[in-house]
Image (tube, rainbow, N blue to C red; front, side, top):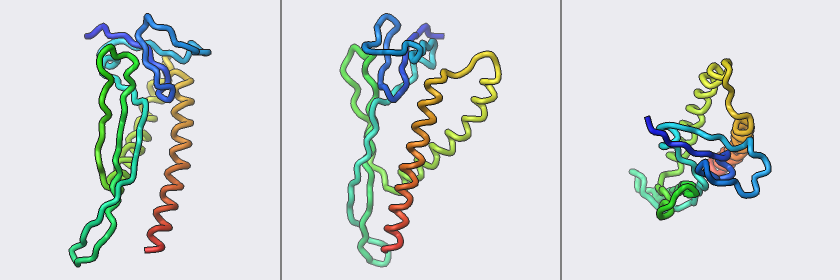
Length: 160
């Protein structure tokens, strides 16, 4: 097993540090969690996610021309631990309905992870409270944004 060790701040803060570094301006050192082993070595923190609308045209089987909404997705890794070149963003162009499918799959899988985590947390060790609180805030904001996106798409359907 690897002896990798790193310190990470909540993902929203986009900070990952080696144990010898100091967190500049960090008012709460309890927000830093030191992790060890192979999982720490493989863990990636994203510092930004960007979705952009790209629209093309297509032709249905019946010859009707239609707008085809694509979404360019860009994920940028946090490179604060890197001594080498900054990482290149991971980018894809997906159809809008494929992005909706991806969001559904992420939310379904995330919901399925909560129960096993809760069972593990019944023991002596508990997850870092700050990180759980941040996750709850992110999920609440996502629910609001997804509801607004769903409303907008339903309005678009009603106009079509």
